[in-house]
Length: 213
Image (cartoon, rainbow, N blue to C red; front, top):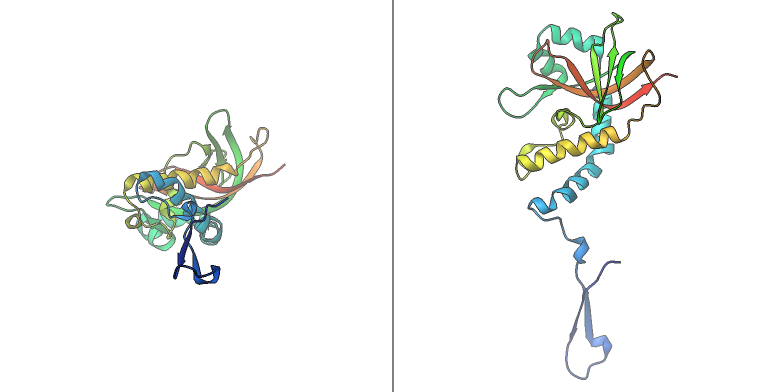
């Protein structure tokens, strides 16, 4: 229960209760999180509440490019594809971040570690060409860097910005459940990935994965 502090100011001695003014002040629990590292968790949780469902998920779903179309665009030039379909991370030499969607046969599944992955064949050549990161351990920060809602200049420092990246990865993978062995089955997915060269492997952090029965 919130603790409410009451300030009572009596206008003059001998006046009744109506002569007293009662003023509510903010509760201790209602104060904004601290600006230093002690308040990072609270600030990031507030930011996830404000952006994950209302903004980030719809943005990725709406802008996700089919695998084949995105591969063709990247083959024509990574920077051109990035300007048309992606978002560059901050800093010189930063990776291009893309939203992608597709489906394919599960060629391999490594589900016995904290860094769970599935290899998907999206072009029917018998080899996995997309790797889905199922977590909870996830490499990279493509979810953070693809989003137009998170600007590094709005964060205290690189440490707080990195905490946001991990929180987004945790949020995404927490909802991914793969039952049984999916190898040989068809999986559909939507997610994001980051690359610095056109030949780099696609390591996708998915926001959704569905495996056909």
